[in-house]
Picture 1: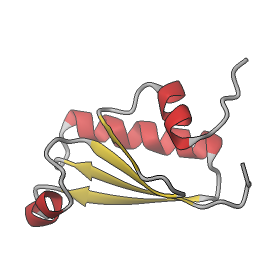
Picture 2: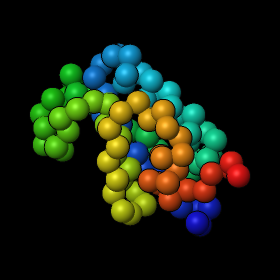
Picture 3: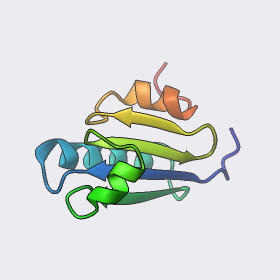
Picture 4: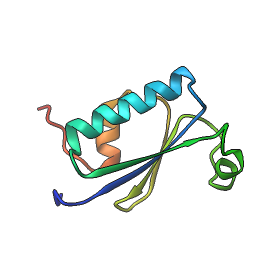
Length: 96
């Protein structure tokens, strides 16, 4: 994978709910470890922007949408399974 590829994520959260906070922490940790200086994370609080969530087809939180690079991927949950995320994002794991 080209190391210059920029990853763009949108994370839909429900205020400061524990699962939403955990998803953000897990995504941030993954990006620090595997996408240093080549990621953007947009946070959408569905309590503050309910119409946007509905328009975007978001019915559960937390939901992560990988917008770039293609293909778009949507993952629901706390993002605690790092290997599944790496596979979904097309990234190599540092583990053997």
